Length: 251
Figure 1 (cartoon, helix red, strand yellow):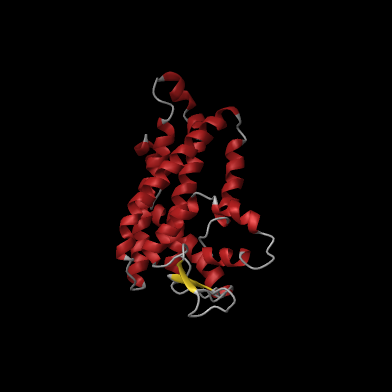
Figure 2 (tube, helix red, strand yellow):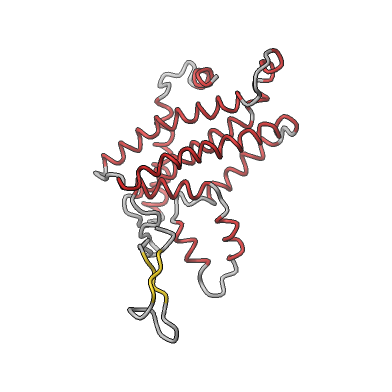
């Protein structure tokens, strides 16, 4: 069924599977122009930073959207042939995983163009990150596919939720930027930050950024660097050599 989904998706298309590479490339160019050239966020090699997160998000959103409507779309086949109802969902996951492979080629092109190699010591973390991403998407896909059988509005609701979910994930901005804002004295967003940290896609995106870009929170317009340690002021003094260093979870 995965081959069927791929054939149907690119049937009679001139470029065929090249669209899997062009779509993220065009998306990256649009965000690059808006956030790097117009808003000037100042993140070095922003194209690589952005593409690291786009890889994760494109797989997640494409697979989840397709999985949600897969059971209803294959209703005639399901009624005629006895097979596990999870198969249409898994076919969508396999199709999105194939597209992820093609989009990884685009990522490799960007790395070569910017003469930037991945962080070799963190590249092995991509394996558990991808497995976690596939498991998460499969579980949510089966859930939403089942709900969509009874509640046909679920597919439309999911589309709206994914739009909000995208901006709740540190893809076009730095995770550290949000962390620093809620850490300010008197901040009223600390309770919302708890919900923000519950986003299951965020750790996967941060892993991809760490492995492919090098850091998870590069220096931007806010002037923050993700460092390997932070200094806590000593009791009764100011921050400096008298403070204690603690490892930062954001690097």
